[in-house]
Length: 490
Length: 95
Image 1 (spheres, each protein chain N blue to C red):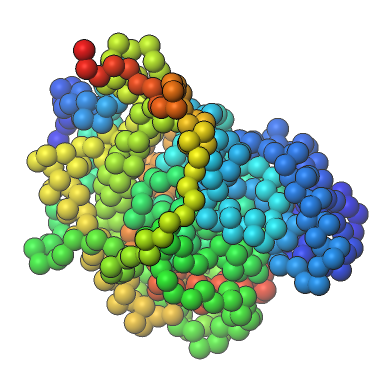
Image 2: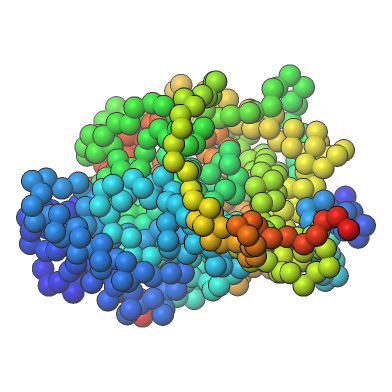
């Protein structure tokens, strides 16, 4: 293989070549850096690229590979990290002005884990500010463009990570998912994105948005890579009190192209009003494929509380965010406006010019929902409906091994199309929010195209059923070639 | 339900969030529109439903109280917008 095409490889392909010593990590990293130099001016996926750090790390890894008997699957593989995860010594901005100059003194647990595997971190990816958004247009720096059509959004909030993987600017990336922020951009960019069960991956060093909903997940070029990254990042962490002390399986174990006997439910509420007809048709074809592959499909499943998920989510997430973001006061780190005459005014001014419109909107919403006189009507009520949504999923998973839905009811929309209408933007995550509310895992995989625009299929399971989801995803992937298509980027 | 100018100003005050006049006007409309969409929850009977506290139940999360190395003062102060004599510097709070 010519060394200038190495950026197009999957993790498992590159690992095989590294193991056989047919390529070096330096060649792989150089290929990724060259690709970034070529297409980044079109895609705008990265906030920071750390060329020198990456090449130095690759050289170190190459020296290790020379003498090592066996290397881990991520050894020497370049990666990009959503700019919401703390990286020691590398600027971490959350795509916000208020953290524009923040250089963390520590690594997030997932970064420690990747480094323990000798991964090569190449840079940090763009996102909606503080992960609040569904298009990456709410970045304080610039919008990321969809590699499949540069006039359209890549989805969000992990739009930088998804676009970078789709554009072969990296071999894989990490994202975070609070209401769909890994899965929805994965669908809109035709890559694989997994939101693990809440508590499966440590949130230590993940800059908090909504703590009871946030999970870190991989964005990869295929399902095998997704399993490999999960093997690296999952596991208990004493520094995250919500991380679960359960053993981590080998997620590649169930990657078998056989789903005979699995019972898959199709909840009708996810084929929502406002869903594009062609997306519906593509999804129905994909579900037909699962049936061909031997799964038993049950079409008329109903989860009637689904229609309340949007309201529950937009009460809980902003409420938690308003508390989490109270820490940005211009004292300990980040942007600070010191023109004011007293401490309170300093805080107000710092937050006024440090936060963008969407972040302010959510802080306002959350503060309102938690304020005296409204707490019971909004926050408490939402937590009760959350119980019902969770129970409804629990009951469904007594009957079905997995549920299948669209990831997004629409194909990628135009840049600017929904920017002035917050409610329309919030509806982008209608199919993905319920899983965060219930804490359950879900994966989005490429499931077709409409006029060369990607469509994603979402596979949902009970807590800690990631292996089953990966198995269904793998079987579908092996029977199709959507994941092999590459954007023309012209 | 529509949020009044005073209500928006009050919420912003609670959140210590400075807002321009244009922002107050915009948020008054947008937040009202969003809150309207929350009315749907009134349809759900939650009389005997406990509020969710945690989706994946864990109880009594403890760890050993072990002495370990922490971050150095220079590391923690390295991002401070203003510092003096190894402290974060803020404006005077008392006259």
